Image (tube, rainbow, N blue to C red; front, side):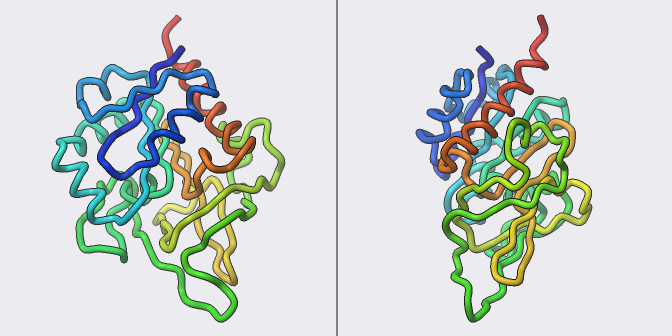
Length: 211
């Protein structure tokens, strides 16, 4: 089974993510070791919490450069929720620079009379990259589970793999570009749809492992 490093930087829902990866046929390895990130077949960067502490914890553990090198090498990479946001250059939530792997910013939802912030609960995706491996074996507009007050705004719209609408605001819900994938929602909380998304990621990892 492929070994997938789940990055431990004190900001992730590690147990649920690992359980989902195990059900998808992978061996998760919770780690903050740069060497183990390098040795793994793929990397998952989960995240729950605030932007500034997340990037501070990553940098304190010496993980920024190993993550950048892994993505640049072509290793399959999946960011989840805050693990998507910290890939960007900056966030309205804080003052720390993000990893800057993806050009763009993290913005806050505008208040509206009939919406709640955070955006919490089940919502339907509008898939904008239908051929992405993320969406294989899924319905055309799958329902997934969100918990977030901020959303990513990439400079390059072509990397958007899906959007979601909250009130009158349609925002990026997932990105995909070559080996780099990341989602704003929580696949580990999204029932069978989320499990299929994790299984799709694991299937891509399997394809890249030398025979």
